[in-house]
Image (tube, rainbow, N blue to C red):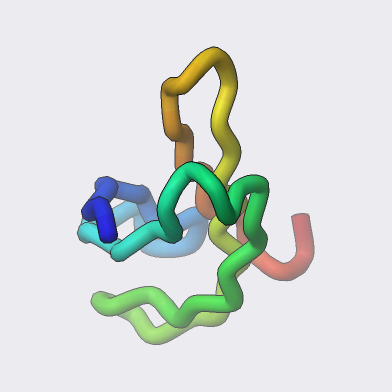
Length: 60
């Protein structure tokens, strides 16, 4: 698994998460912030071989 940095949409702190391999993308990961413990969704996608991860609050 690859580690990617994401920023929490609530506390704006950055931390790393393990993302699935490219064969399993796109994926939505239900995750709690490692700093403030608020729930979020991490959307992991791939475009032209580049993996991207974006965190969104549950209200977004």
